Length: 292
Ligand code: C5P
Image: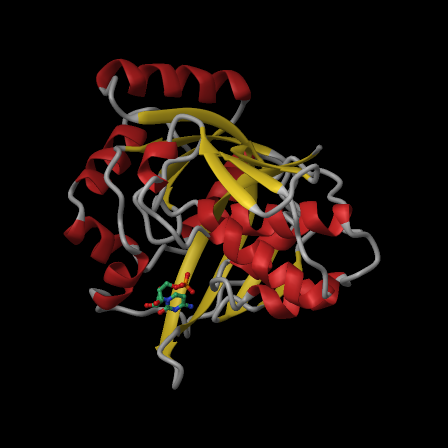
Protein backbone atom coordinates (compact mmCIF):
# COMPACT_ATOMS: atom_id res chain seq x y z
CA UNK A 1 0.00 0.00 0.00
CA UNK A 2 1.43 3.35 -1.05
CA UNK A 3 0.41 6.55 0.69
CA UNK A 4 0.96 10.06 -0.60
CA UNK A 5 0.10 13.22 1.28
CA UNK A 6 -1.60 15.84 -0.91
CA UNK A 7 -0.87 19.12 0.87
CA UNK A 8 -2.94 22.28 0.61
CA UNK A 9 -1.49 24.76 -1.88
CA UNK A 10 -1.45 28.38 -0.80
CA UNK A 11 -0.84 31.35 -3.12
CA UNK A 12 0.95 33.91 -0.94
CA UNK A 13 0.20 36.42 -3.68
CA UNK A 14 -1.44 35.95 -7.07
CA UNK A 15 -1.18 38.52 -9.82
CA UNK A 16 -3.21 38.01 -12.96
CA UNK A 17 -1.99 39.42 -16.27
CA UNK A 18 -3.38 39.37 -19.78
CA UNK A 19 -5.74 36.82 -21.24
CA UNK A 20 -3.87 34.55 -23.64
CA UNK A 21 -4.92 33.16 -27.01
CA UNK A 22 -5.73 29.83 -25.34
CA UNK A 23 -8.25 31.57 -23.04
CA UNK A 24 -6.12 31.23 -19.91
CA UNK A 25 -4.52 34.15 -18.08
CA UNK A 26 -0.85 34.72 -17.45
CA UNK A 27 -0.14 34.61 -13.74
CA UNK A 28 2.61 35.50 -11.32
CA UNK A 29 2.33 33.79 -7.96
CA UNK A 30 4.38 32.66 -4.98
CA UNK A 31 3.17 29.19 -4.07
CA UNK A 32 3.79 27.24 -0.88
CA UNK A 33 2.26 24.11 0.63
CA UNK A 34 0.79 23.45 4.06
CA UNK A 35 0.98 20.82 6.76
CA UNK A 36 -2.73 20.04 6.21
CA UNK A 37 -4.03 18.21 3.18
CA UNK A 38 -5.73 15.23 1.60
CA UNK A 39 -4.25 11.77 1.25
CA UNK A 40 -4.13 9.37 -1.67
CA UNK A 41 -3.50 5.68 -1.15
CA UNK A 42 -2.86 3.08 -3.82
CA UNK A 43 -3.37 -0.62 -3.19
CA UNK A 44 -2.18 -2.64 -6.16
CA UNK A 45 -3.78 -5.90 -5.10
CA UNK A 46 -6.78 -5.34 -7.36
CA UNK A 47 -8.12 -6.64 -10.69
CA UNK A 48 -9.08 -3.25 -12.07
CA UNK A 49 -8.77 0.44 -11.29
CA UNK A 50 -11.25 1.90 -8.82
CA UNK A 51 -11.56 4.98 -6.64
CA UNK A 52 -13.14 5.37 -3.24
CA UNK A 53 -13.47 8.83 -1.72
CA UNK A 54 -13.58 9.08 2.07
CA UNK A 55 -13.01 11.73 4.71
CA UNK A 56 -14.84 14.80 6.04
CA UNK A 57 -15.31 16.44 2.62
CA UNK A 58 -15.98 13.29 0.56
CA UNK A 59 -19.66 14.16 0.10
CA UNK A 60 -18.80 17.18 -2.07
CA UNK A 61 -17.26 14.83 -4.66
CA UNK A 62 -19.87 12.08 -4.63
CA UNK A 63 -21.49 13.07 -7.95
CA UNK A 64 -18.19 13.73 -9.67
CA UNK A 65 -17.55 10.93 -12.14
CA UNK A 66 -14.47 12.52 -13.64
CA UNK A 67 -12.41 12.87 -10.47
CA UNK A 68 -8.94 14.31 -11.02
CA UNK A 69 -7.42 11.33 -9.20
CA UNK A 70 -8.81 8.96 -11.85
CA UNK A 71 -7.77 11.32 -14.63
CA UNK A 72 -4.25 11.47 -13.15
CA UNK A 73 -4.11 7.68 -12.99
CA UNK A 74 -5.23 7.56 -16.64
CA UNK A 75 -2.55 10.05 -17.61
CA UNK A 76 0.11 8.06 -15.75
CA UNK A 77 -1.03 4.87 -17.47
CA UNK A 78 -0.60 6.56 -20.85
CA UNK A 79 2.84 8.03 -20.03
CA UNK A 80 4.19 4.86 -18.43
CA UNK A 81 2.50 2.55 -20.92
CA UNK A 82 1.20 0.36 -18.10
CA UNK A 83 -2.24 -0.80 -17.10
CA UNK A 84 -2.92 0.48 -13.61
CA UNK A 85 -4.86 -2.18 -11.74
CA UNK A 86 -5.16 -0.59 -8.35
CA UNK A 87 -7.64 0.41 -5.70
CA UNK A 88 -7.20 4.15 -5.21
CA UNK A 89 -8.51 5.87 -2.10
CA UNK A 90 -8.77 9.61 -1.66
CA UNK A 91 -9.18 10.91 1.87
CA UNK A 92 -10.66 14.34 1.38
CA UNK A 93 -9.72 16.48 4.38
CA UNK A 94 -9.75 19.81 2.53
CA UNK A 95 -12.94 21.55 1.43
CA UNK A 96 -13.53 21.17 -2.33
CA UNK A 97 -13.39 24.13 -4.74
CA UNK A 98 -11.72 26.20 -2.06
CA UNK A 99 -8.64 27.84 -3.63
CA UNK A 100 -6.16 25.45 -2.02
CA UNK A 101 -5.60 23.39 -5.16
CA UNK A 102 -7.09 20.36 -3.43
CA UNK A 103 -8.02 18.54 -6.63
CA UNK A 104 -4.70 19.50 -8.23
CA UNK A 105 -2.73 18.31 -5.23
CA UNK A 106 -4.74 15.05 -5.18
CA UNK A 107 -3.94 14.53 -8.86
CA UNK A 108 -0.25 15.26 -8.26
CA UNK A 109 -0.17 12.89 -5.26
CA UNK A 110 -1.67 10.19 -7.50
CA UNK A 111 1.12 10.78 -10.05
CA UNK A 112 3.73 10.50 -7.27
CA UNK A 113 2.13 7.36 -5.83
CA UNK A 114 1.99 5.64 -9.22
CA UNK A 115 5.60 6.67 -9.94
CA UNK A 116 6.53 4.80 -6.79
CA UNK A 117 4.43 1.80 -7.79
CA UNK A 118 5.99 1.71 -11.28
CA UNK A 119 9.51 3.03 -10.67
CA UNK A 120 11.67 4.19 -13.54
CA UNK A 121 8.85 4.36 -16.08
CA UNK A 122 8.24 8.11 -16.14
CA UNK A 123 10.67 10.91 -15.39
CA UNK A 124 9.90 13.92 -13.24
CA UNK A 125 10.24 16.13 -16.31
CA UNK A 126 7.67 14.03 -18.19
CA UNK A 127 5.26 14.37 -15.26
CA UNK A 128 5.80 18.14 -15.16
CA UNK A 129 5.26 18.43 -18.91
CA UNK A 130 2.09 16.33 -18.91
CA UNK A 131 0.49 17.44 -15.64
CA UNK A 132 -0.88 20.67 -17.18
CA UNK A 133 -3.38 18.51 -19.10
CA UNK A 134 -5.09 17.85 -15.76
CA UNK A 135 -5.28 21.52 -14.71
CA UNK A 136 -3.19 24.68 -14.54
CA UNK A 137 -2.17 24.08 -10.91
CA UNK A 138 -1.20 20.43 -11.22
CA UNK A 139 2.43 20.89 -12.46
CA UNK A 140 3.34 23.02 -9.45
CA UNK A 141 1.83 20.39 -7.14
CA UNK A 142 3.88 17.50 -8.59
CA UNK A 143 6.72 18.31 -6.16
CA UNK A 144 5.27 20.44 -3.37
CA UNK A 145 7.80 23.11 -2.46
CA UNK A 146 8.12 26.86 -2.67
CA UNK A 147 7.65 27.93 -6.28
CA UNK A 148 7.65 31.17 -8.21
CA UNK A 149 4.94 30.39 -10.72
CA UNK A 150 4.36 32.16 -14.04
CA UNK A 151 2.67 31.55 -17.38
CA UNK A 152 -0.64 29.74 -17.15
CA UNK A 153 0.93 27.91 -14.22
CA UNK A 154 3.27 25.71 -16.21
CA UNK A 155 6.46 27.68 -15.55
CA UNK A 156 7.93 27.66 -12.06
CA UNK A 157 11.26 28.24 -10.37
CA UNK A 158 12.27 26.97 -6.94
CA UNK A 159 12.52 29.55 -4.16
CA UNK A 160 14.75 28.42 -1.31
CA UNK A 161 14.83 31.59 0.77
CA UNK A 162 11.46 31.59 2.44
CA UNK A 163 11.73 29.29 5.49
CA UNK A 164 8.84 27.85 7.49
CA UNK A 165 6.05 29.94 9.01
CA UNK A 166 2.67 29.67 10.68
CA UNK A 167 -0.76 30.39 9.31
CA UNK A 168 -4.45 29.91 9.92
CA UNK A 169 -6.61 28.76 7.01
CA UNK A 170 -10.26 29.75 7.00
CA UNK A 171 -13.05 28.59 4.70
CA UNK A 172 -16.67 29.52 5.27
CA UNK A 173 -17.95 26.46 3.44
CA UNK A 174 -19.08 27.95 0.14
CA UNK A 175 -17.57 26.26 -2.93
CA UNK A 176 -16.38 28.72 -5.59
CA UNK A 177 -15.82 27.95 -9.29
CA UNK A 178 -12.40 29.08 -10.54
CA UNK A 179 -13.78 29.73 -14.03
CA UNK A 180 -16.52 31.99 -12.58
CA UNK A 181 -13.96 34.01 -10.60
CA UNK A 182 -11.70 34.50 -13.65
CA UNK A 183 -14.84 35.38 -15.64
CA UNK A 184 -15.75 38.17 -13.19
CA UNK A 185 -12.20 39.58 -13.05
CA UNK A 186 -11.99 43.27 -13.94
CA UNK A 187 -8.65 44.57 -12.70
CA UNK A 188 -5.42 42.78 -13.60
CA UNK A 189 -2.11 43.80 -12.09
CA UNK A 190 -0.02 40.89 -13.31
CA UNK A 191 2.16 43.10 -15.45
CA UNK A 192 3.55 44.77 -12.32
CA UNK A 193 6.30 42.40 -11.35
CA UNK A 194 6.93 41.56 -7.71
CA UNK A 195 10.54 41.41 -6.60
CA UNK A 196 11.66 37.90 -5.71
CA UNK A 197 11.67 37.23 -1.95
CA UNK A 198 14.86 37.35 0.05
CA UNK A 199 15.74 35.56 3.24
CA UNK A 200 13.55 37.21 5.87
CA UNK A 201 14.61 37.26 9.53
CA UNK A 202 11.04 37.34 10.86
CA UNK A 203 7.52 36.49 9.70
CA UNK A 204 6.71 40.21 10.06
CA UNK A 205 9.33 40.96 7.38
CA UNK A 206 7.86 38.29 5.13
CA UNK A 207 4.41 39.82 5.69
CA UNK A 208 5.74 43.30 4.79
CA UNK A 209 7.15 41.91 1.55
CA UNK A 210 3.85 40.18 0.72
CA UNK A 211 1.87 43.37 1.44
CA UNK A 212 3.32 44.78 -1.79
CA UNK A 213 1.47 42.01 -3.60
CA UNK A 214 -2.19 41.15 -3.85
CA UNK A 215 -4.48 38.40 -4.91
CA UNK A 216 -6.16 39.85 -8.00
CA UNK A 217 -8.86 37.22 -7.76
CA UNK A 218 -9.96 38.51 -4.35
CA UNK A 219 -12.34 41.27 -5.59
CA UNK A 220 -14.25 39.03 -8.04
CA UNK A 221 -14.36 36.17 -5.50
CA UNK A 222 -15.79 38.55 -2.87
CA UNK A 223 -18.40 39.69 -5.35
CA UNK A 224 -19.44 36.13 -6.17
CA UNK A 225 -19.23 34.94 -2.57
CA UNK A 226 -19.67 37.59 0.16
CA UNK A 227 -18.59 35.02 2.78
CA UNK A 228 -15.01 35.53 1.52
CA UNK A 229 -15.16 39.05 2.93
CA UNK A 230 -16.40 37.63 6.27
CA UNK A 231 -13.42 35.23 6.37
CA UNK A 232 -10.94 38.02 5.55
CA UNK A 233 -12.48 40.22 8.26
CA UNK A 234 -12.41 37.48 10.88
CA UNK A 235 -8.71 36.88 10.17
CA UNK A 236 -8.00 40.63 10.28
CA UNK A 237 -9.50 40.77 13.80
CA UNK A 238 -7.19 37.95 14.95
CA UNK A 239 -3.83 39.79 15.07
CA UNK A 240 -2.64 38.31 11.78
CA UNK A 241 0.46 39.92 10.28
CA UNK A 242 -1.01 39.52 6.80
CA UNK A 243 -4.41 38.40 5.54
CA UNK A 244 -5.07 37.20 1.98
CA UNK A 245 -7.24 34.87 -0.05
CA UNK A 246 -5.59 31.85 -1.71
CA UNK A 247 -6.11 30.94 -5.37
CA UNK A 248 -9.61 31.68 -6.62
CA UNK A 249 -10.97 31.41 -3.06
CA UNK A 250 -12.80 31.09 -0.87
CA UNK A 251 -10.08 29.92 1.54
CA UNK A 252 -8.32 32.84 3.20
CA UNK A 253 -5.22 32.73 5.33
CA UNK A 254 -3.52 34.81 7.99
CA UNK A 255 0.17 34.70 8.89
CA UNK A 256 1.29 34.72 12.54
CA UNK A 257 4.61 35.10 14.32
CA UNK A 258 4.45 31.71 16.08
CA UNK A 259 2.53 28.40 16.22
CA UNK A 260 1.02 29.51 19.55
CA UNK A 261 -0.30 32.74 18.02
CA UNK A 262 -1.76 30.79 15.08
CA UNK A 263 -3.43 28.27 17.42
CA UNK A 264 -4.94 31.07 19.54
CA UNK A 265 -6.21 32.87 16.40
CA UNK A 266 -7.77 29.67 15.03
CA UNK A 267 -9.54 29.04 18.34
CA UNK A 268 -10.92 32.56 18.53
CA UNK A 269 -12.20 32.46 14.91
CA UNK A 270 -13.82 29.07 15.53
CA UNK A 271 -15.56 30.40 18.65
CA UNK A 272 -17.09 33.18 16.51
CA UNK A 273 -17.84 30.87 13.56
CA UNK A 274 -18.27 27.28 14.76
CA UNK A 275 -19.50 26.12 11.32
CA UNK A 276 -16.48 27.30 9.39
CA UNK A 277 -13.48 25.17 8.48
CA UNK A 278 -10.64 26.77 10.45
CA UNK A 279 -7.22 25.23 10.98
CA UNK A 280 -3.75 26.30 12.00
CA UNK A 281 -1.14 25.12 9.50
CA UNK A 282 2.59 25.27 9.10
CA UNK A 283 3.46 26.55 5.65
CA UNK A 284 6.53 25.65 3.60
CA UNK A 285 7.66 23.07 6.13
CA UNK A 286 9.88 21.34 3.60
CA UNK A 287 9.64 17.62 3.06
CA UNK A 288 11.26 15.05 0.90
CA UNK A 289 9.04 13.92 -1.98
CA UNK A 290 9.78 10.77 -3.88
CA UNK A 291 9.45 10.41 -7.62
CA UNK A 292 10.45 6.94 -8.86
O1 C5P B 1 -6.72 24.90 -15.54
P1 C5P B 1 -7.94 24.82 -14.70
O2 C5P B 1 -8.94 23.83 -15.23
O3 C5P B 1 -7.68 24.63 -13.26
O4 C5P B 1 -8.62 26.25 -14.81
C1 C5P B 1 -9.97 26.49 -14.45
C2 C5P B 1 -10.41 27.80 -15.10
O5 C5P B 1 -9.70 28.89 -14.52
C3 C5P B 1 -10.12 27.88 -16.59
O6 C5P B 1 -11.18 27.36 -17.32
C4 C5P B 1 -9.97 29.36 -16.80
O7 C5P B 1 -11.25 29.96 -16.89
C5 C5P B 1 -9.37 29.85 -15.50
N1 C5P B 1 -7.91 30.02 -15.53
C6 C5P B 1 -7.37 31.08 -16.25
N2 C5P B 1 -6.01 31.27 -16.27
C7 C5P B 1 -5.20 30.45 -15.59
C8 C5P B 1 -5.73 29.37 -14.83
C9 C5P B 1 -7.10 29.19 -14.84
O8 C5P B 1 -8.10 31.86 -16.89
N3 C5P B 1 -3.87 30.65 -15.61
